[in-house]
Amino acid sequence: MVRYLYHNRLATDIAGLKMKTPVTTASGTFGFGLEFTDFLDLEKVGAVTVKGTTLAPRAGNKGQRVVETPSGMLNCVGLENPGSDYFLKETLPKLRKYKVPIVVNIDASSPEEYGELAAKLDVKGVDAVEINVSCPNIKDGGLVFGTNAKSMAQVVREVKKNTSKVVITKLSPNVTSITEMAKAAEDAGTDALSLINTLIGMKIDVHRQRPVLGNVTGGLSGPCIRPVAVRMCYEVAQAVRVPIIGMGGIMCAEDAVEFFLAGASAIAVGTANFVDPAIAETISLGILEYMDQHNIKKLQDMIGLALPERQ
Amino acid sequence: MTKYVEEARVIGQRVLNRATKQIDLIAPRIAAEAVPGQFVNVQVSRRTAPLLRRPLGIAWVDKQHGAISLIYRIIGDATKILADVCSGDVISVVGPLGHGFDCSAKHPLLVGGGTGLAPLLYLAESMEEEGIRPDVLMGGRTADDLFWKDEYVNLVERMGLTTDDGSLGTRGTVMAELPLMLQRLHYDCVYVCGPAPMMKAVSAAVTEAGIKCQVSLERYMACGLGACLSCSCQGVGKRIKVCQDGPVFWAGEVTEW
Ligand SMILES: Cc1cc2nc3c(=O)[nH]c(=O)nc-3n(C[C@H](O)[C@H](O)[C@H](O)COP(=O)(O)OP(=O)(O)OC[C@H]3O[C@@H](n4cnc5c(N)ncnc54)[C@H](O)[C@@H]3O)c2cc1C
Ligand SMILES: Cc1cc2nc3c(=O)[nH]c(=O)nc-3n(C[C@H](O)[C@H](O)[C@H](O)COP(=O)(O)O)c2cc1C
Image (cartoon, rainbow over all chains, first blue to last red; front, side):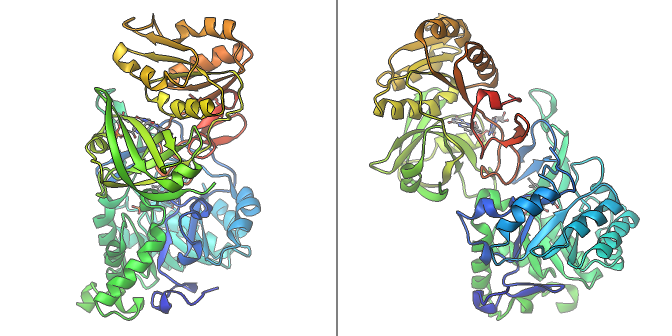
C-alpha cells in the first residue's frame, strides 16, 4: 500500500499503520475524504480519518452549529453521521479505491456498543479505528468516557477485544491531567494516541443576550488552541511509549513541525481544511522544505527533538 | 462539476448603497462553470482572524473575460475587510459551490429581499440571455435598500417594489403585492431568495396557488464543501446540506427555515 513518495523521507509508522507522510486529516473536518478530491490527491495524504461514525445514523444538534471566534471556531455539530451500515455499504467502497490508509473515528454510548461497532468495522479497507472518547457535543457518551480514566480504559479494552485493526485512542483536553488519561489508555492496550480533541467553550450574543450555539457550548478548534495542544503532546510524549498523532490548530508546515519536535509521530490537520481544502497535501511539501533547511534527512530524525531528554 | 481554488485578481469595486458593495474578480475557471444560484467561499485575509472563508452568492458572470461579481452587505469583520480590498489585490476564492436553480421556467417570477437579490440577478441575466424576461418583486426597509432596481431594470419585464416605510413602491412587505401578481400573471415558477421569514411566507403562498417554487437558503457554514456539517438541516425524510444539496431547494424539500 505504501508507495514510494516524498522520496521516502516522510515515511512514518503508527503502531504498524504505515504512512508515506505523517500528515493525516482530523475527524469531522475532512468529511469522508471524497468531498476534497477536486483539490488534492488523497493518495498524497498520510491517512484519511473520516467523520465520527456511530452504529445508527445520528441527526446531530439543532440550531446554529458553528461560530467563528478569535483565530478559531466553536462547533456543536453533535456527531451527525449516516451510521455504520451506510458507511460500510456506500462510502467505504468508494474510498477504498484510493491507495491511502483509512481510519474510522468511532463513537458510542457504552463500552459494549464501542466493541460492537469496532467488530462491525473490522473489515477489509478499514486500516484503523480511532476511539472518540472526547466528543464534547453529545450527552449520551463521548466526553463521559474521555474524562474518566476508568471508563475510558474499559472502552479501550472492549474495542481492542473486538478488532484486529490498529486502535488509536483520541484524548480530550478537557481534563485535569492529560498524562493520567494517556497512561490509562496505554495500560488498557491502545496501540496509539491522538490528541487533542476540541476544548469546550461558548459564545454569547450580546445583542440578543443569549448563547449563539444551539447546543449552548461547543468545541473550540483552530490556531487559538495550538499552544495547548503542543503542550499536551509534549507532556504525553514523555509519559507513554505508544506513538502519538498530534493535532490542534495546525495551519502550515511549521505548525506541524512543532508537534514532531514535541514528540508526535504523525499529525492531523483539522479546521485548516475549511480554509484551504488542499492543505493536507501542501503541508507535506512544506515539511520537506523545513527538513532541507535544517539538514534533517528523515522525519524520524526530528521526532521528539524538543523533549527534555534530547535537549 | 469541478470546484476550484482560484487566486482571483480584483478588477474593481463599486458602492451600491451605504452598506452594500459589488466586487469584480478575475476567476476564469469558476466563471466558466458557474450556474445561477451557486456561490463561492471567499478568504478575505491570509491571517488567522477572520479565520474562515465567507460564502457569497454569484451575482454576475462575464464568461468572455473570465470574471465574476459578488454583491455583499458590509456587516461584520470579514465583509469590512473585503470592502477595503483594492483593484489589483489577489484574494482566494473557492467555487463554484452548491446546486443552482432549475432555470427551465417559461414565465418566471423572482422574489427577493436584501442580498438575496444577488444570486437572483445572475438568474435574471441568464434567463434574459435565453430570451425569457422574468418579472421581479423586491422588498426592502426603505427606498435606499432598493438600489437593486437599477441593476435589474434592463433584464426584466415587470418590476414590483415594496418598502416597509412606503418610501418607494407599495408600503409593506413583498406579501402586500405577491397575491395579486400570482393571481393575474400566470407564472409557472417562482424563485425566492431573501430573509427566512420572507422565503417562508412567499413559498407558502406560491405553493398554495399551485405554482412551483424554488428557494435559496442561507445557513452559517464553514467549509462549503459538505464536510463540516455546519449547515446540515432536516429535509423531507432525509438530512440535507445547504452548501452541497442546496443552497437552492424546491420549497417542498424544506422543513426548517
Ligand atoms: C450560500 C450563502 C450565500 C450568501 N450570499 C451572500 C451574498 O451574496 N451577499 C451577502 O452580502 N451575503 C451573503 N451571504 C451571507 C454572508 O455569508 C454573511 O453576511 C457573511 O459571512 C458575514 O461575514 P462577516 O465576517 O462580515 O460578519 P460576521 O461578523 O461573521 O457576522 C455578522 C453577522 O452575520 C451573521 N452571519 C455570519 N455569517 C453568516 C452566514 N453564513 N449566514 C448567515 N448569517 C451569517 C452572524 O451571525 C452575525 O450576526 C450568504 C450566505 C450563504 C450561506
Ligand atoms: C466541525 C468539526 C467536527 C469535528 N468532528 C469530530 C468527530 O466527529 N470526531 C472527533 O474525534 N473529532 C472531531 N472534531 C475534532 C477534530 O478532529 C480535531 O481534534 C480538533 O478540531 C482540533 O484540531 P484543529 O484545531 O486542527 O481543528 C471535529 C472538529 C470540528 C471543527
